[in-house]
Image 1 (cartoon, one colour):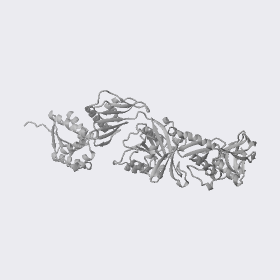
Image 2 (cartoon, rainbow, N blue to C red):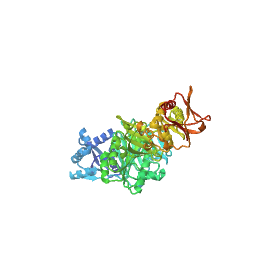
Image 3 (cartoon, one colour):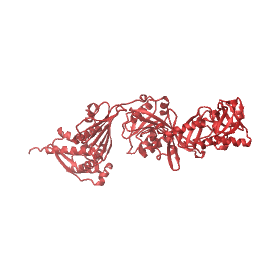
Image 4 (cartoon, rainbow, N blue to C red):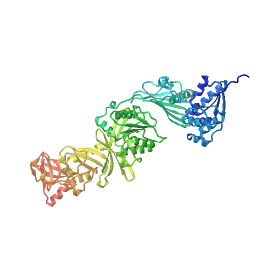
Length: 640
């Protein structure tokens, strides 16, 4: 009796089919002439993955096609066996329902059971199956060849964009001068994209320093060394597309030429947002900050999805635990880092996690997309209680074209918001100032039910032309009362800030505020009088308050004769013609003088060379002088 040819019976599970090594072992002759039994549950699982647009599903189906070709050539016998899983069983595949069906088929048909799944192989052995556990394939980095997609890159290429039927495009150039250019005239084909996609997924599986970050319906995200790859397929995208992004430079914090004060602020466990538009260099700066903090003895961790920050191995990079960053945050609170870099903070849940960790005492640095520095702060409004924002974030570093363009700091205080005048309008206000100049740029407060983000001061190009003319008129009017220089800034259509020397403030305000009231009535504007040397009004000097408060007239400080140094004085003769009220003082011709009624300052003037001071007959000043004369009050002109 002739010897019968021995036939091997092999039953692979899903992991082996996706890996693709079974066909390679058959071609090498190791499994030549074997009978390969594919469980129907394996086919259904691959079909479900492919229908969801996942690359691993397509890769498994390609391996099945390769096995069919080998069977057609008579190298192996290929059969399918077992039952198909129900829809519910496919949905519960992560709980092991499909794996159980695959084992049942292996038990039914017998033979050698192949698996790359450690848990699957252990259970199969416990069930009495003849099992070969195939260790997941890995290669030494020295064995890796250049990836096809790397051929599209040059030293200054930031990203490559490949889409079916479209010429390959890339972003190239130095930071600050990046251009979107065509890198090949010939369009990319579907076959070329599929080949590149398979190669990338294979590398992510084999390289111990690479991984599959996301695998969902129509989208796969890979991290291969320093490259972040996004693969999109229909129905998620209108056609197949591969985008590859990599950092062009690794920059230390010294490159940004930060001041020592800002470095100290960064290192002091604060809440910091790194903001900027896409591609501005936010993540590069964040990685530089992480290295700086690590070098200065701080425990630094990162929260990323995907994990693409270029940081040293001492800094552990965490992804969402069980798909949720909340779980990652809970773990990090047990790890107790000094600083956590959160890249990227975008959704409401991200901001809540950032706030929770910051309030727990962890130094937090969040990377946020924003077109202006203040926009990063506005993204907190409605997500975090308004009064808590400065405790959550007290510094915003805005990155533009790879440079630190602006740094804002936040403080919480109670004050009258800028532009309001009444003392009873005081409320909690978040003051946002430039870190270097300390100039206040924005205020955030509630007005009724509305949260207001109010710019403080307008850029020169936004100021109305009429305001310039109004400033000249106000300066002329105030100049009648103040002997020194006068600075005027119109802040709105109905208000202005006037700055004079400290000793001139009481003259501009007048007795009980009567002078400033007349000026306001004359000009139809609210006038905020301040000392020229100060940036904000000071209550101790008793002058009129504007944005800070409005002092009641009866509480305004009065001037006294003893406080006014004089050289000489005269009691003028008073005349009136059709147009003017004339105060005669020939002794003081050509001199700068001040006019008083009953030792109360009224206004300042220069006596003409004819020895008189003229006022319009219908002016408020003229009326007040005539009323005082009728009452017998003393009118005096004093030399300054």
